[in-house]
Image 1 (cartoon, rainbow, N blue to C red):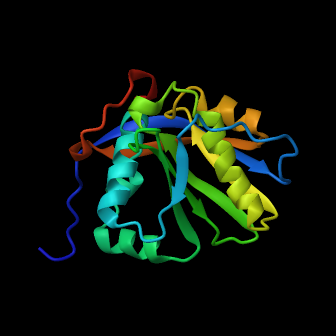
Image 2 (cartoon, one colour; image 1 turned 180 degrees about the horizontal axis):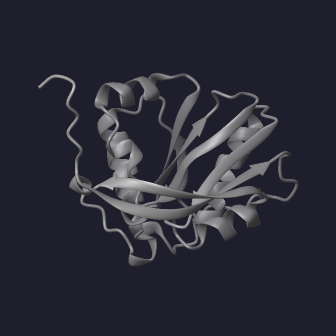
Length: 192
């Protein structure tokens, strides 16, 4: 039948989202990345590369929205000149994390996604990698930088953003309907 929408099975998730903002560039020196660790912009990020980054980094943190985004829509997002992808490589040249900047609200830039690959968590790269994203934004001449995190993210995410100089703007409770077909592990503490 035309016009009939089939609802797919979902799992209800409840999170508290914290919105953060930075209104001036940090004045303290940036912490150094470990020797041999580099961040490179990926100006022609393919959908496959992006999905690998997003799905791997976000697997343990219920990152689901871009998983359900159709390829054509994701391709359009990745070709938008206001969006930039930056990839962290460890000293052996392996992918260790990524961040995505969204400057569509220029002169404010949003850190849309930020995270480390599972094997890079706890290796002392997080704050320096975050600072790389911050310095990239302020180096472009932005006037503000925003980011949000939630209770599904790594427990050190919010304290790391605060340590880097972001301030909390507001908190909001959200309920998500995460499609079960994605196979994401939903921690018991987040189940609705």
